[in-house]
Length: 73
Image (tube, rainbow, N blue to C red; front, top):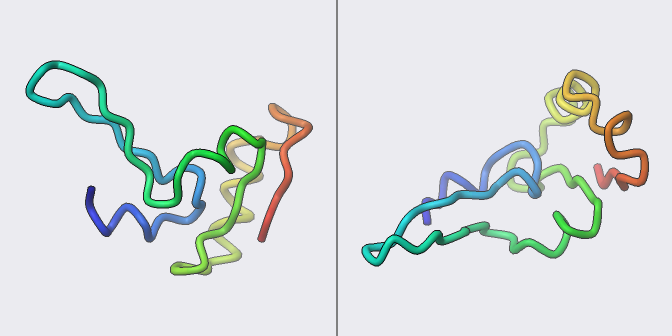
């Protein structure tokens, strides 16, 4: 897994997918998947960019689409 993946704007979008040699799907996330499945979105502390984070919340309409989403900024 690339270390660069751990510097994206939000922790929960830091997800990668690959196929191994057997053709199995491998899911990767430097912060795990718990927060993703617990309806949270968290600004990455390694790359704290509040303006970009808030812009993505707005333009992607995450709070409209997922009203139970908890924002950790």
